Length: 313
Image (cartoon, rainbow, N blue to C red; front, side, top):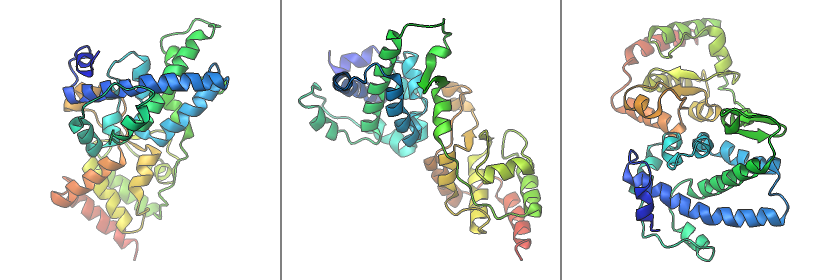
């Protein structure tokens, strides 16, 4: 079956460029899966779920855009790449490159697999092939294990880590060692900052001084839902300028998964209420937007920043 024929059988709600990317990925996965299957069987690792999880978790941890991929793969979504958060997590540049990518696909075989894979000039593609191949093997192994109890549909969507079944998202989060923003704010400055945040309704739920302190120290237990990403970026950039938090706060925020976007409009229709962590690329895009047009809360933020500066004297 040609790749063009494969595309016709995939959910028509997905734009064709991304259906092509999915079909392309699946072609490579088919070969990688077979090779991995035989390699693991040779080394007697095939029925070892702990070993497979040990291979899967680092890929998820090192590639944040992959976090929700396994869920949609296990749910049987032919277009798991589209329905997961991959394109949003990866950023606009990756989104564009996957949309525009096209090349004359040859039949992928063990003989030409390595050579053809080198031709796929797409970010994350090689890692995606490996991850999906391992996930498919994991699912096959789990199906062979005699059930000791009747599992619910939610339990069947879990990945075994050690002797405990936990959701993939939770397993990944537990692997993240959160970093501090290295805050240098005193109590009065925290008070000013919280007043500002509540004034401009920066987050979808109220923020206390204690909650903000935990966030900056890298001890926040739950991500904050952001009502306006441009305003958040502008505010944190100003705090960094005053050396009240780290200059590279964007990297810390993205790696910590400290913020999630607010679902509305087309994003709401596409993703529903599923959490979507704000990525480094999105923060960078917001900084660019602020340089061009500014945040809608710019005047209010600047006034609060002046008050913060007064406490630095």
